[in-house]
Length: 381
Image (tube, rainbow, N blue to C red; front, side, top):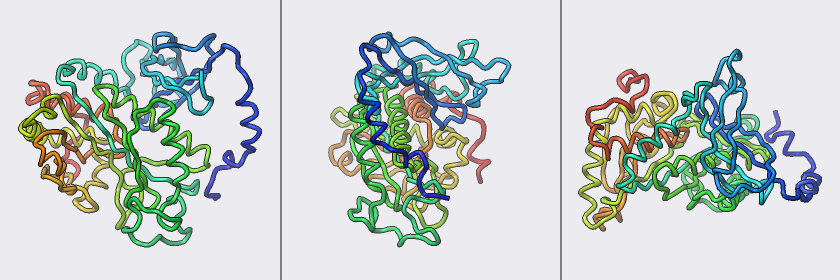
């Protein structure tokens, strides 16, 4: 099997010719949504008669849910509800990308629509002004399913020189990373950085700070842009939390959290309170920190490779082997944010941020089990 896709080998010069053709006052709007897997993204495009100035100018649409794992064929129409608009870095201005919520035929949220409940939670805690930043790790793969640029019949040199590495023997796929970065900036995604990760062909980008529901919106669009950029280069991006077994790092989505109180003078006391609450609900959070109730994180959170154990909650200053880390600078300043290192790379950011907000900021979080999904951490042992 070829390491790159056939479509990436098409004549891009011809493509650029047609993309440069004028389109008058018409506007192409690409609707993007999360499919029934809770991990995959789908999209389709329609023409509007003029450029939308806000999300309110974009009409609802529909799609065949039976082809995306979201409905039965006998009642397959699903609603696309526009919620967040971005510029389109592929077809350029005035064209738009629009992230959508998915509703079923009865206008109830689809099973994979975690945004709906997340928005309710964020509205409840908005006076706390919760800020989030998520560090999205991912691995580039060739079309053969092997990490991009890895030897066909072997393995690269052990981990060590690849983290933030420079050089053709250390950094694999930088063109993709830099193009994705620029695409995010053009689109209006709040991307704030990127770096090569510990495993070769593994990278990370960071999105944030974002307040409330904005975190999930911007991370999902950043993921969509990554998949589209990879499509252009003929490779794939995977958010699998442990793409390679053995002595290789997994992939997480470390989530940085702060509130108005933690950012204020002596906010460290509020950070300690939040961490204590998180510790009491460790098993419930593990169940929502990957799409499969903790099964994906079971492969990753082993206590090795800069992770904590999935079975035990821990926290410490500057320790990357804990469940929750307080950065060294925050410990010195006695205010700022904390980092929840448990979410897997393939987590749903809406599920993660709403769980953290509920546990840390809502009084009833101590007694409710609303954030828990099927499965329990004890079943993972």
